[in-house]
Length: 240
Image (cartoon, rainbow, N blue to C red; front, side):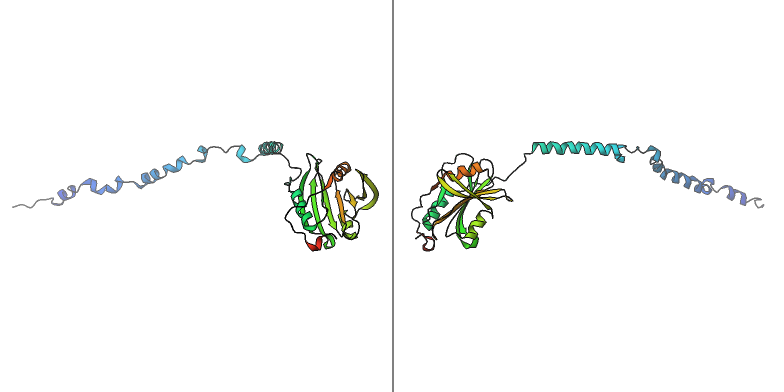
């Protein structure tokens, strides 16, 4: 009985060839190239160039400022400018009637001034040197102010302060009534004064920056007011 001459040859040929070539089926360079493809789309050559306007050149900034300036000028032209504050009117006549009844003073107010004259202040309180003072302030047609101060037992200091420390400038007669005239040049103010007779007489000062023809019209219209009914006079302020 004979033994086969080449038993090892068939075992070498029976090993499948693809088993030894399996690592060659997946090549790493191909995988690397697949992941690097998105980077090719981000190439700087494909980015959009920046706008020249976004670079902030001087001509562009100048045009922007010019447009803003035109807009501001348009707003200034449209919005009304307020030259003075309009103060609300007060009931000067009502306050004068109450003060006249309370003090028994011959309180006076202008009557029938017409349009453009507006009372804006009416107070009764201690004034200069604690002298009780009834004060009204009126806006004139020219837009200026005239203050009317009235007090019994007025002191020289009270008068000086009421005329804004103006200098005596003679007298003036308006509607048959004589007034002392004072001029405060620094303040641009003219004042007319009627001094009360005796220690309990009523002193009246009309002063302001209004034109003097308005001041004359104001004092020409002064008339005594009627005291309010039902008000008991205060003994310390009554004339006697």
